[in-house]
Image (tube, rainbow, N blue to C red):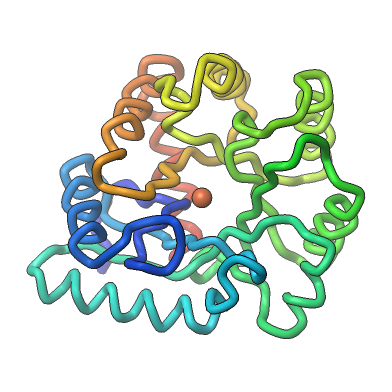
Length: 240
Ligand SMILES: [Fe+2]
């Protein structure tokens, strides 16, 4: 039985498989800090970028999560991890999905994606529309950190929200760790009810303090109940 508590919906704490935790010691150090911050579990979302990380298929990610769970349990920690992924939007997304599957968050149809280019690419909307048509729930990670011009970014967020894409804010943006522009946007979008989720995007135990500080910023801005919905109720639905 999963205890009541927060569940993180975006993290790179699997050891040694992307630009996240380099080894199991770092993964376990993250888990200890998440427990201290009121979390009971993490959906592990390593980068799914075939050119950079060809090994990171949904099937292998499930195996690695099982191995990390065994280490956590062996360490005597009560904490649960689930498989997921964070795919970068690319021309080849559907070719990849048809071969290796759509990386979904735990037991859900939700799927996490990101984009770092200077403008929104032509292939993104068809990919997103097809995911929606096939019953997936696309989630765009940290939109406040994207590199688009501000007017394009604001229009894009309006259009994606209207089409049913969920926006996931980064806790580190809220506390200022991603710079003043991301902080301003994230705080405005949180207050405006734009985010369906808030998540850590944890990569390393030495860089978690700003994430947890972001939780307090969020509580100060919109209250405990609203934050609980964004980091607990909605993420629990993914794993149940
Ligand atoms: Fe990430």
